[in-house]
Length: 322
Image (cartoon, rainbow, N blue to C red):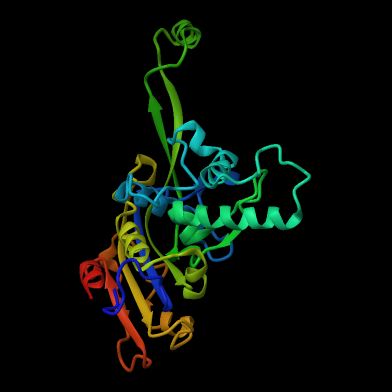
């Protein structure tokens, strides 16, 4: 991190970054409206992964890296979480209970609007302090028990594949059956338990690119620190290692290129900095099957004054110690 800031200091300068990750023989982000096939742009046939999917993996990695660390709870829990932790209004109520504020599930309608607004503001600050993903990504917490709305300083775009993808559906079999009735039916029909058939959707290989932005003006509002910033990038580097799934195949973060600005407003437009990271498509005559098929070029010449470039994952330790 910048040498003049400690991990507890609020992020006070802009960061923009490019994320490159790949998938081999897996489904990086299934589309529930298309039978869980890999998401696809129908015009260009490029694959894409939503920002929500990437944030989910970062949340999971943060939960593993900062387990039981105060102030690093996760607001949007996964299906593996404890039942109560997935009910958002109960999490909102915990802010009112901790601060001993009025604002129960059945609020007293006699309270003045000013008191309600003050309580909401206090509860909002408490949620930012307690939950990493609220502090980083923001959240709408106005459902029932009102903890306000938060615009997070960290935002990502959809990830889009460099080349078009060709999703594949692979037939799979399961030799077991679920119920006694199903077993008896198969045995009567076929003479034995034949099992069941299914399908698995995969992408043979694809390299995806996404962009991200860290806004220090919003970091000041949510309390997003340089310690949070380092944890965010650490989680992004590790997000597939800590979120393995047979359906996702082999996924890996290949490179994160970070442009650190010298001030809050930034020293150059983000899109011009992103243009310095070049990954040329291979074209239809050469289908990609490996990260080694691609050449990544980063233009380091004449970087705008006030812009410092970092490359991860190799430079993560250096970035933390800088």
